[in-house]
Image (tube, helix red, strand yellow):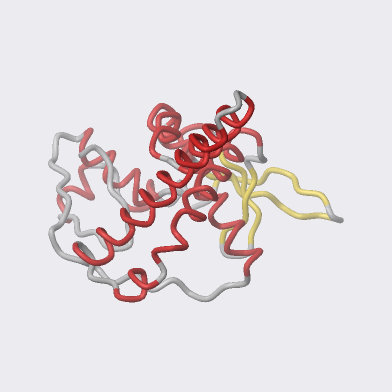
Length: 200
């Protein structure tokens, strides 16, 4: 592994000092990613823990939740450009819809519907396997039928990461994403935002 992801990480103090300290990491939106990435670049080993961490998502409003998901996708594009580009191959439902459209236009509607059904079942089964066999999340297991929708939404966020704005809000404040995922804080004045110094 050459990067890390939250919600829980442990790192040696000597490694933190080796990569330049936490203050350097604070300028990045995906601070968990760069913490692991710089650790790997420094010659240290990044390992995926075998422990299952319970992660509870707060019940935010729909609009703020969608904005956060879009910000996350955009941040990934800035942090890992090539990896993010390849992420399009991890979705299934969009290709099922594409198959339905192509087969339907070619007079093979039944085959198109079969392709779409296959992708829907595939995503639901994937969720059931992970929820039931890996993280043992009973709630996710019961809601597995919703995962195909999440798969489609993920694809939409992926598209939006290339065509949307590089600006986002972090803890209520406006920021702009710079190359490599670095943050630049913006100052709001009379309805307009202007660059300020880098976040720290």
